[in-house]
Image (cartoon, rainbow over all chains, first blue to last red; front, side, top):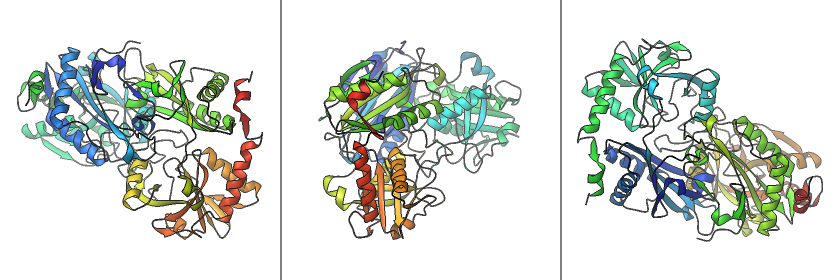
Length: 301
Length: 301
């Protein structure tokens, strides 16, 4: 087994990622009763760390969990994982699980919440050749879990629908899937939000999706660029006729989708508006407003 | 931490349950990409082992996983966990997780599925006094994850809706929750199916629920007892006016629900039809048709 190189924080210790293991009795596993967030480090700098930690804390509070460390301690733990890993470009995950109760009661209020953090190499949803030429995606009839069941603002591991969407995509000769909702609108894919561009208007679904930080970054950049941008329902047929379609994810940033259900979208490579947002997004990684060196986070007092 | 005493099978070894741990990178944790089943042992006998294994194999095939051992090997592993644990009454869980791919690719087809089994003491959803006097339950507006998203016949750990239902119940002075669906019908609770009895007709939801083995046992016993029994949609108000309501679960069998949304159901203790099904259910535990000694499963050739 070729575990990626990395460092984890678990049970209040830093260990190699290969040794980071949780009890099979943790409700985070047996009930997927957990929340998480992923921030990335690029060229030694955290990207929008405060925004990710804001969301993580909002998520865990919504599901009645308690962070066992202070916010500042959490920031230092994340920085320490990155520094110990030696990675300049890293994918940094923080997880809070329900844990287990000391008496193994079934009452989640009795459980002791467990914090796990780790830094591994920065991962791309796309392979290198896809970063320019784009991804082939299938719009599946599988419905994304409804917000009437699970609050999508709580970043969560309820992904079996997304995984079954991937198998659906593979059967249709695509590499990734976008799920729909009961009203027939598109929602999101495994780990990414979706944007369309048509007649210079940029649109992204307004409901039933994770409010991704990269999604937010794309919206904010689009506003800065004075683009016409709107959050609204997008029917499943609309992206098929779009000029450009792109995905947003911490694991890759702004990524062109150039084939949908076997049909070419736009020119078949990254479109002009996608490229402007893509370039601005990566430029922000060196901007002090949205990024901060890992060393300086570790040294925060 | 007071881990329950028990024995697990993991990474092809038998270990104390306190040492049974999975990698934090296993997709079974990071995507809740796993399926499982729970069979119980009562007075040294497995109850409906073949039925549970049939369902486990059907579940894992539906989500494109492969059992790394034969069916017979699985049976022997489960028996071995029970024997090594020393428990006469045991809760025996078998889990197959997606695992991790050797290259840590995001493609679930590359992952090596991981089998985990464990035997711990038999657990009750009810406390001792509730077994006779019944459970107080709240019918929550939180919707159970729809079968358009996750096939409920695949037994899965997508439980955050059920856990949030529990918190909803606690706020309403109840101990457990029943979730509803988009049509306003009842579905199931955390780990149990629901039955109502009204004017001598027994009913249980026909869709959007796990097809529990204890649910099936209750249906089969009701047929044997020549009761009028039907699987159909049940509106959220119907149980409030029922003569009897009961829950079915491997973790406790046939369990009276005597309070719903603060209202007393029936006489406030186990009703007469519930009792007949309850008694027949426990009698089946010594019947060779539905049960088999752990030793004899271990000795199967």
